[in-house]
Length: 214
Picture 1: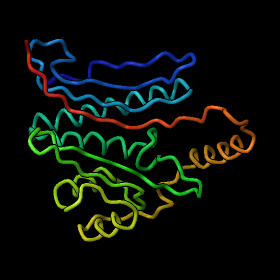
Picture 2: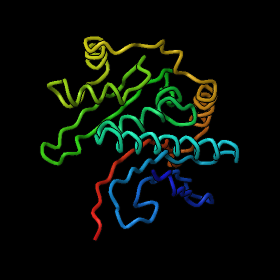
Picture 3: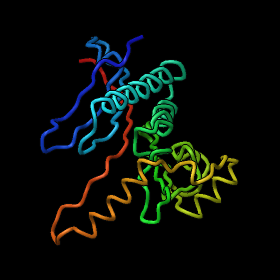
């Protein structure tokens, strides 16, 4: 079984480093290019060498989990959910327990997952979710169980309760690092001149690609 074989980092000078891993026969250079799991762990303005390695390893773990699920269960949606769950549980990524705080110092999270069968193009999504360790799992439930394609805030909370999704204390999702980031951001905003570019936040993406050999 191939292991994650491609790690790429964008230029660090004046640009946002990007962390991504491909895993599967395509990444390994095999003529059989099916399947491939691609995990994009986001980009940040500048991070230490040690943290860069931790981010790398986190993306590798996510890609490996997604690929193994795909090989064993042969479900694209299961593979995506598995890979993203790894990222949500990793404090190095802006998702789950390391989500960037809102202006009130609270964690509000979004997640979406798409059906990959190409027939109904269905999607499940949640937004402004609180007290949920893995929003991707809740989005999966919206995809398969809800009559709507997206639920937000209190609607998502009620749906989660109805589905038996366990809750976690909101403070458990707040990290000291992001408290410092919020304080720094408020300070910079107060000193920011009109027209200055606002700081960008990185996002998490996981895709499973179906590729045919030519």
